[in-house]
Amino acid sequence: MLPKCLNCQKNISLAWFVVARMSTKYRCTECGALHEFTQRHKLIGIIAVIPLITLVNVLESIVPSSVLRFILLLALAVIVMIFIPKQHRLSEYDNLKEEIKNND
Image (cartoon, rainbow, N blue to C red):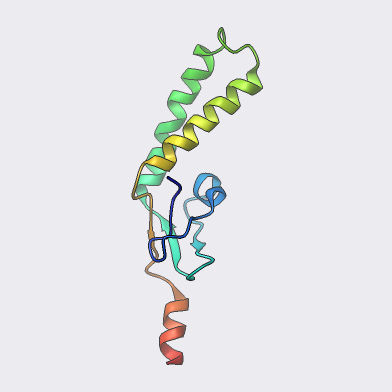
């Protein structure tokens, strides 16, 4: 279940959702709604790093390639982040909505 726009239900860019900084906002390409991260996203990002560091060492005997271990653990972290809801919300500071109201 990929993250979706809260306004039109179109998929949100996975790159923004996974690697963007907390202050970065995302504008939906379909409806123009502005999304921002919640504190839950920051907390999940911090909590996800600790098990990854531990699992890198545990998987060393099973998967000898460090690059492959890193890719597997990164994929696992992304999957976990995708399935936890309410990590983004519609921004209250959307200037596009105000401009549309003023033009009407």
